[in-house]
Image (cartoon, rainbow, N blue to C red; front, side):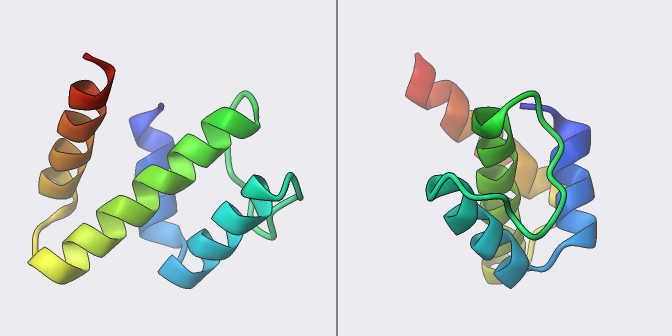
Length: 80
């Protein structure tokens, strides 16, 4: 998971496009947007994170850093 890539997605790609990219990756297809990452798994992680952050920013009226912090806390909790 690379924060600069997630930030780039959040700033430059809409939620609907991200969800379409998520679906494409899950179906092992090439997404319509470019997603940086070493492999499909990392690309999917970046898309998941960007979707979570955009939704959090919209529903909770928080900034990028706050939404990112919440996402990373969830990740840390899930792997510990």
